Image (cartoon, rainbow, N blue to C red; front, side):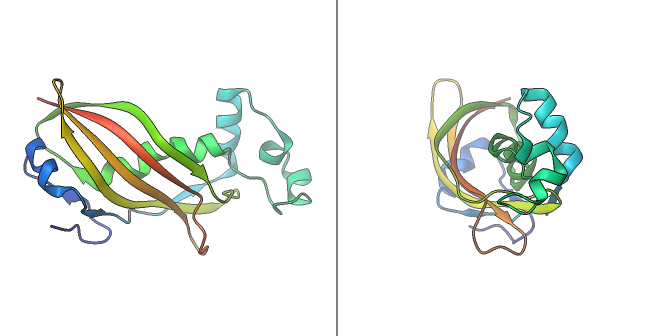
Length: 158
């Protein structure tokens, strides 16, 4: 079982997750992280550190441009990775958390990122199926990714 690059892994039902363990997912579509998004995230989190929001100072700083907050990049997994796995018959997905997150390279304003990964595990629980995805957020034009994460979600059947 495999997904076609650039298209989602489509399963017939939540039970099919168990047989899909080990399947590659993604890569997804490129997504631009622009300065306006960085500033909105700064406002939402009250993190206005100059490396994120002071364009002039950040451009002269260590990264050569303003950078996205690490937590902004992590939060984009919802937009970047969710479309990579289609499972009909799910009433809702609940964010369980992360087993591992590592920020490997900053995302500069104006960069494009995308998600790619593997369905690492799927385990039935009393409430649904707990799914772990090993995910990477890639930066266009960079060999080094922005982050890697093991994302745990609970998919509750309809």
